[in-house]
Image (cartoon, rainbow, N blue to C red; front, side):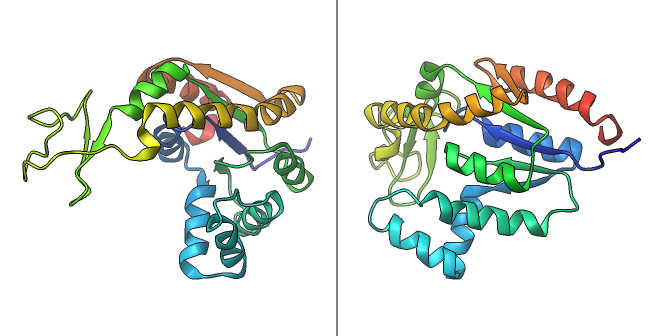
Length: 219
């Protein structure tokens, strides 16, 4: 009997879905190596690597980093992690990326966090910042003492363009359109697991229970 030692997970969810928090808990609980495509891309940009400079040329023009460039970055890093169980976060985001990844690594499961867009929109648009210091407030759980005013300086707060309601709506729709073919791809392979809810703390126990059955020795 052949025993498969390695376990590989992909987690998917739009900005504001709680993906970062759930990823941290998976890594802490089950000991998987965490690979975030966003963090990896930023590291390559800071280090000025060949692919980092290539990616920067597209980012500077306001374009998405091409599929082949992102795939090259991810596969290079995964090669260094080939002996570990891993959690891949933020990749793949397009069908070509998923297909290229599958040629080299076949994930055991793909976790989708299904959070209503209105819930995400409320989370993201509740964030305000003090431009001078970068202090961040959230009107739901960390509000300023006076609405719209920084606690320390008394100066007005502002909202990043990315956090404005119209921008958030546009980002969420773009994400959905981009990733829907990826979700269908994994659903057809029978490895897509969907966890729905409006609160991360209520979604997490279900994710934990699912992975605990897959990885009982690591609990």
